[in-house]
Length: 350
Image (cartoon, rainbow, N blue to C red; front, top):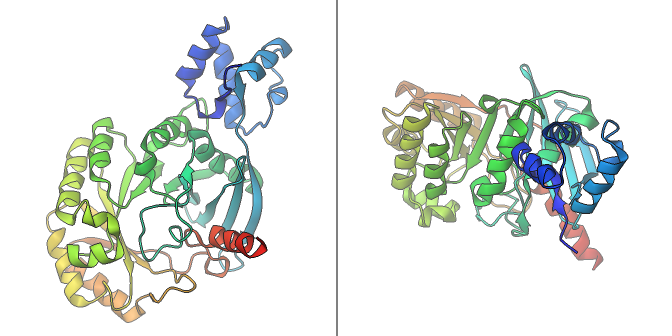
């Protein structure tokens, strides 16, 4: 018996080809694609699809599902953090945030992460597997259904390195932006990477109009290699060169993420060095007050150091903002903390 295909992870064109092989017309694929974008969990919910076709679908495909294991709602700012359970027992985190311009969602692309950044809780329990395109998409759909909110912006900045799951993430981008599906435009999507240089070049060739966010977090190789192991393979010079090519190919300004860590990367010397590194580059720097992870010796920078760092960059004509501080601070909204707690509880039970 052939292995069932996860239908949520199929682009519309691929679904059309599958149905054509079953002797079904093209418009049936569009109907099914629309139902999937609305979060149906069984073929029987597709009421404008014949029973005969529903039975055929069940013989060839299965519908991927995720369930809410835990949901935390911030009393400070309305941020909602979900711990979703996958069908194989893995879990992933998703954060829904409210801004003046609407609702933004931060989604995961892997169950766990192997990049090893020392300031992130996602790495502690290690990498498990890549998410399918359907599982990535379902985070957006399930959070929208549960909250009753229209999500207008997506950030691929949750657990996992998106470019380490390149093919599935590219499929997800096509699925979520498709006009017959969820239909969130590419300019409303940000993809954050710690700097897998070859994949940045590949992404540049696709000329997608998303925002590329680089998790930089240091102005030089010495500091970056200590806190981000990926820098030992792809150093800052090669990363910046790839970013410049990305800008040339797409015309999209790069955003550099910079977590402010007390005594590590927040000195005035670091600010001047970062200004020199980015001089003349059409970019934006987003300073992030470090979210403290339980058990970590790393602490967030003081407000004074953060303000001084920002001023130096701005004095050098680098557009700089400070991320909204303590978003979801009362619900551990930084990457990996909720999943980390759940896995720790499982270990204690065993």
